[in-house]
Length: 227
Image (cartoon, rainbow, N blue to C red):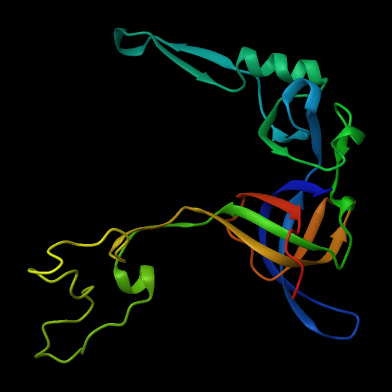
């Protein structure tokens, strides 16, 4: 991997190519990111680049004495993080991620990484946390089939038999059952970059990208070539 960037999801739209083809795209605000640390084999045992994205305020302590008790509200960047960013010579960042670049030695502290590192036609992998759906049944969660919807039926949207009573006398681990759905890390591979707007730091990626609006998206040079 030689290039990657952090982005936030703006939403979906559609654009027309020069040949008139309609293409659904996801609009991502990619960067600008700054290099906050360069890791080397000599110091850290491996080669990588740590980048920061999104502004974050310094830690502020507010003391609230209402109700006779003193309540301390802390938010922002703590002292350890402040020292880390000060050493890199950059302002405090909301997100920090590490990329193992093959060319990590070519980067320097406080160097900016913008959307123009990608070009139209590039293939990328997008990683994000999917939308949380809460507790869902087996039909929605796993795509299982329902039973008859007639009035005499006692079986409509139930998951069905989980295990016989005599053998195996248990429910096997990994059985597809109702439960929490979504809010997991997903990577969609081999997506095409349709358009790059370097002035507005925008990437238009063909198709859907996991995550809700304003979610953090990690965009990497694809590791899977199209078959």
